[in-house]
Amino acid sequence: MLAVMKRIFIASRGNPEHLASLFRAQLPDHDVLVEQPDPQGPAVPYIVVGRPLPGVIAAVPGLELVLSLNAGVEHLLASGEVPDHLPIVRLVDEGLAEGMAEWVMAHVLGWHRNLRHYEAIQPAAQWQPKPEKLARERIVTVLGSGALGAPVVQHLLAFGFKTRVWSRSGRPVAGAESFAGRERLIEAVSGADILINLLPLTTETADILDASVFSAMAPGSFLINGARGGHVVDADLIAALDQGQLSGAALDVFRTEPLPPESPFWSDRRILVSPHVAAPTHLDMAVAEMAGNIRRFERTEPIPHLVDRQRGY
Ligand code: NDP
Ligand code: OXD
Image 1 (cartoon, rainbow, N blue to C red):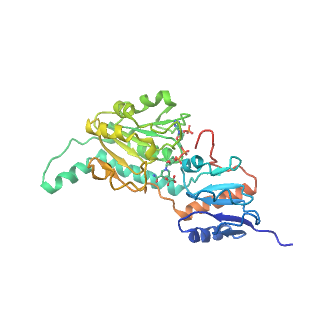
Image 2: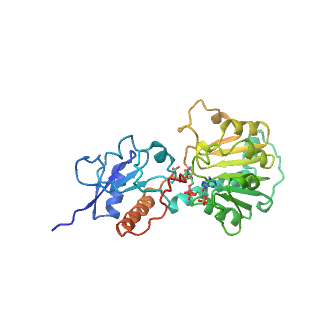
Image 3: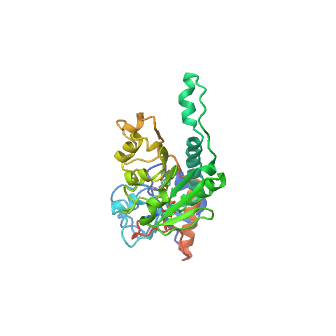
């Protein structure tokens, strides 16, 4: 008797055919679909999702595992689209970690060595050196010690920055000073020259970057947000910039994406806007990771990076 091939539904709206071909190469013993399966048809145990349209997940028959194309899953949890009994696997892979570390370090070093200042005065042919510090003279705090935060901490340490890392559990990174829990947030950011946000967006972390955090940082400090727009109280950010408490911010993520043309962020010279490109998903790496998780699931082995719905990440 022929074995029935297990089915995978690629529900991504961006180039599902390409994704399907990568899955077929990784899992040739599986049947990969790009069209919504018949709800009355044979079971489809796996779905691969980015931001699925309402109703798509619920209509898949016999679903057992949801594989997210994103590291952040707040949209999947908030939509209520994923039935409670279904496990969700976040995307964690080397490509995301490397990409985020590159984006963060580009901004850290650019601000640390005053590159924007020299760029701004160049048209006026001004020879105006600023006092230049060494990394060892700067305090940098990273919010989030996870798949993206921990590698960033390691890069900062390699450059010599005095590095702190703050997380829910105080997950340590060797060489950095680590802080746990909300009650130690202000201590963790106190006097920081640079603050890097790599938290997931949850009910506990929404609006976390507010006036209380900015005012605890060093005067003239710099914010780097690579996580989610919902972490930042935008009005408090602008106020901190206006007061000179912050000298600038690099923002990759926004409450509304794409960032609307009328957003004041676009024309604010103190803010560096990038269009959610800090850590793009590299599909070849992502599919290899997801295929590995499907194999683990079928061998009934533990799957890493399952979302904990109680924690929200
Ligand atoms: P992880 O789940 O691996 O790490 C999350 C970290 O945040 C953990 O250290 C966790 O603490 C900490 N944390 C969570 N909740 C709290 C809290 N209430 N208080 C203090 N610390 C908390 O996530 P990733 O590193 O993989 O991703 C982080 C985020 O980056 C994603 O959720 C997504 O929003 C964003 N992202 C942005 C991208 C971009 O291109 N801009 C691309 C990919 C992701 P603990 O260690 O104790 O669990
Ligand atoms: C993600 C993202 O969460 O792209 O992967 O932001």
